[in-house]
Image 1: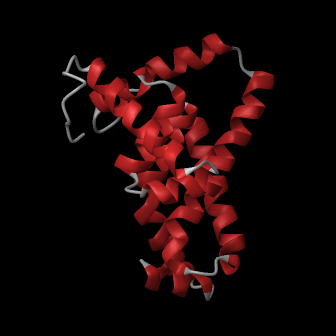
Image 2: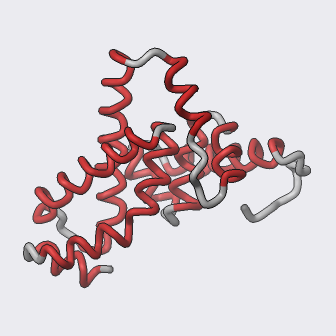
Image 3: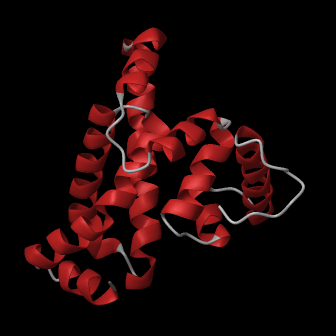
Length: 172
């Protein structure tokens, strides 16, 4: 991936396209976990791709591309949430969420919906995007200890949603 990032930084459009396509599934899952709406997730991803293309030259180390891109995506999602608060009634959001069923693992997405918001994003970033706790800490601007605590509590909450013994360690 580092090679693709370096090529894309040289304005190689094909390399950039390949790079973004390799991240598309993770971006979608992250955006959906925040927004709970396919159209808004698509908008956030589109905006993220545009910002990444425009600012890729500012990325100093290619190995941090995924973390950098994820931070941009979260910012775009937060922008959409701020706009949504001004425009969309809450019952429409809940209705559109209940209609979204085209995911590879509906049970996983349903479990994520049951998690407290403060745990959901960290669980997605850790398990779906494969980010380390220190990377999540950088992206969300919170101490690593807070990320680890929320990850642990999120796991326990997921275990209780599955009626699994929360005292036992499980790999999710």
